[in-house]
Amino acid sequence: MDSLAFLAWCCVQMLLLLITICRFSGILSFHCFFSSKTCAHGNLNFFWCLFSHLKSFDADCYDPLDPNGNITITFDVLSYVPNGYVARVTIQNYYQYRHVENPGWRFGWTWAKNEVILSMSGAFAIEKGNCSAFNQNTTGYKPLNLTLMAPGLGYTCGLLMETNPTHYSAIGGRRDEQVSRTWKSRCTYSSYLAYTTPICCVSLSTFYNPTITTCPSCSCGCKEANGNAISCVREGAVPSNSLGTDIVQCTNHMCPLRIHWHIKNNYQNHWRVKLTVSNYNYGRNFSDWNVLVQHPGFGLPASVYSFNSTTLSTIGVPEDVALFWGKEFYNTELLQADEHQLGSLTTEILLQKDPTSFTLRNGWGFPRRMYINGENCQMPPPDVFPMLPNGSPRQKPFHGQFPHLLSVLYFIYGTLFGF
Ligand SMILES: *[C@@H]1O[C@H](CO)[C@@H](O)[C@H](O)[C@H]1NC(C)=O
Ligand SMILES: *[C@@H]1O[C@H](CO)[C@@H](O)[C@H](O)[C@H]1NC(C)=O
Ligand SMILES: *[C@@H]1O[C@H](CO)[C@@H](O)[C@H](O)[C@H]1NC(C)=O
Ligand SMILES: *[C@@H]1O[C@H](CO)[C@@H](O)[C@H](O)[C@H]1NC(C)=O
Ligand SMILES: *[C@@H]1O[C@H](CO)[C@@H](O)[C@H](O)[C@H]1NC(C)=O
Ligand SMILES: CC(=O)N[C@H]1CO[C@H](CO)[C@@H](O)[C@@H]1O
Image 1 (cartoon, protein in one colour):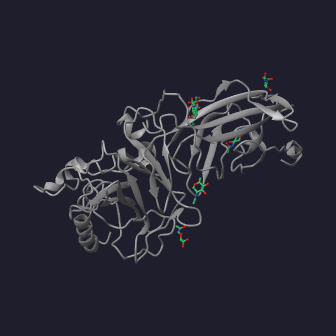
Image 2 (tube, rainbow, N blue to C red):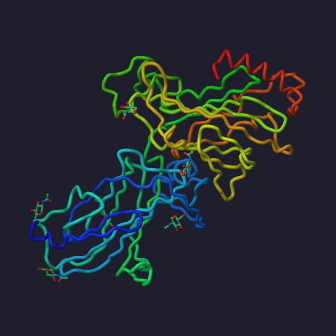
Image 3 (cartoon, helix red, strand yellow):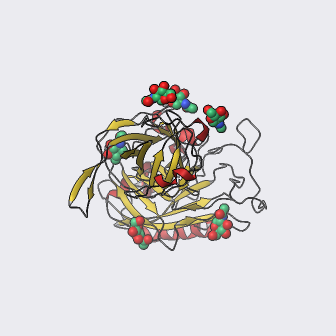
């Protein structure tokens, strides 16, 4: 390999990171971090996905809230050298709320001929290819079978396709140059490929009804040995070797993550919600988490006290969509459960009322859909949502005449249930 070291080359541009001098065969993989929050809005509306015929399109592959989301891989061939070529590989995350968890991504491919990687910078080449199979007449074929682990399964990458060569500015912006050749591939995510069961569920409660609507049982698997049973540990019985493993506390839902939506107060012009995310996992922290809420109330300005937030533009989705994530140096990490408590994050949200649409009837005050880290959470069915008290004159839309009574009710329920 030493004799080939002179080919080492270096250059870093754009998001990623690697320069390869390519020549033989094998699978390349490297790991490294890449940007977690990339927001982009495209107008493309086509979408395909492997396995889309196996389960509902909506739930698994096509995400109507982020229809253009993709991870784009670009191979820019910068130059040809006597026995190979120098390429820059760029990975761009165009998903609005899907990031790469620890320990980071891995990316690889198979070579068309018996090429190898002679040198790389900006990433680590774990496997460089088979030097014994090296053939001096090999030229620049495009890599095949791209594989992206981010960090687990879930992504399917298309073939690398020839596109217009990338232009970049050189000499401090005074010259526009282009690379020799550019190939692009689009990788898309399917939670069906990544997880066999959901990883999250939603529970609901209100100030006006003492009944808590729990997560649907067996949302993420069942405790009992009835086919899709998963193992769990009793509350408080922390396993000693849980670090880095997915060991969840036994619950009726068996989900590692739960989001609780509590309608807390109803004021004249505002209403207040408490949002709590709980981690039932004894061996896993979630860093740079995000929570997405689809709910009609978020079109108006809202005050979010403990999380960072934004509204997302979504085309063709009737309700507003808000995205929440942690505040730096405060709660960007959702900690694992321990023997005393669950990992937890919480915020209150003060929402403005739109007098034409606001109501507490018929479950209007509950979210339509919630995601955590881009994974859909199991919602309870609407027929078990907390109801307004039966026969009460106050089941008409609330208009602020009753805040006193409601706050007393809330106080009682809040004390009983510890919201
Ligand atoms: C990937 O997403 C970006 C941003 O939404 C979009 O501009 C681009 O066309 C998409 N790529 C493909 C191949 O669809
Ligand atoms: C490497 O290539 C040589 C020659 O083609 C072959 O005999 C050997 O089995 C290959 N090794 C691996 C690990 O593929
Ligand atoms: C790689 O892709 C080619 C077609 O591009 C296919 O024929 C081959 O079976 C794939 N190999 C693997 C290991 O997936
Ligand atoms: C999660 O974070 C806590 C606190 O920083 C740390 O003690 C624990 O080891 C972490 N767990 C894992 C699995 O990394
Ligand atoms: C909110 O998020 C933005 C983007 O990630 C960040 O720049 C800003 O510092 C965050 N604010 C707080 C208070 O963490
Ligand atoms: C493209 C090219 O030059 N291919 C040659 C590679 O080497 C083999 C055998 O050494 C030749 O048969 C090919 O023509």
